[in-house]
Length: 142
Length: 124
Image 1 (tube, rainbow over the protein chains, first blue to last red):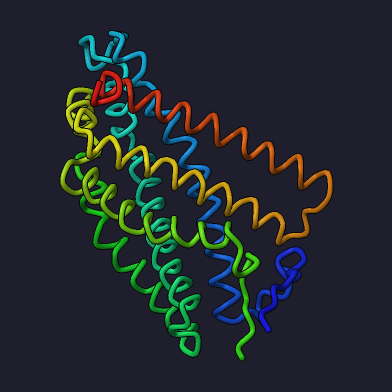
Image 2: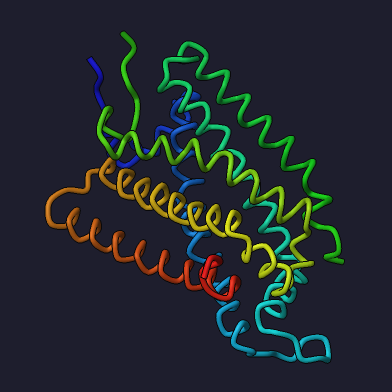
């Protein structure tokens, strides 16, 4: 019979040394989920500068009048900190997507017996995709 | 039979919607990252280029559907994570309606932004 579990405050986090792959996958999936929904609100807030920009609002950017949307985005992208945070966002999104695929497959009855191996594969693939994407994400920031 | 280990009660409508939106988001989020970081670089963004994309009904519809599914998936995920941590009673009701209100604000603002880029709904 199927059953869900109440983990208390993440099953007493002080016992983290005893956690197995499935528990880490659960914690990472929650953490990356919180980051992504937080980012979605921030993303829409920043993109909303398109609303005044479409009405003709401008700002002084690199010595010339630029629409506030383009000026805001290009200014943010000019900051190395923002580029580094974007790499972090990519890592978070890629892990959530790969681990989410793993969860969907398990829900469909595929791969439950190898769920620990697929978690490690998600981690390794996340690392590889993130590292491979760094040059693209950092390009032009210096 | 293997025991389930999930934040969601299996078999419910919200459980199914969480998974359907997950499958959709897997594809569209990958497309979004690829298009706006690898095809076009983020520091090359301009109002004109964003508008040109959004003026196409297919792209506008995909992005609005992306916003709706991402909002549902994220907010429903947060709600279920909190229930999983033991949220019950009045607090659960307050959290639920706060999340619903936040979602409505996010959707409203997101669609306003899409319309600003597109100069209104693309068909009109």
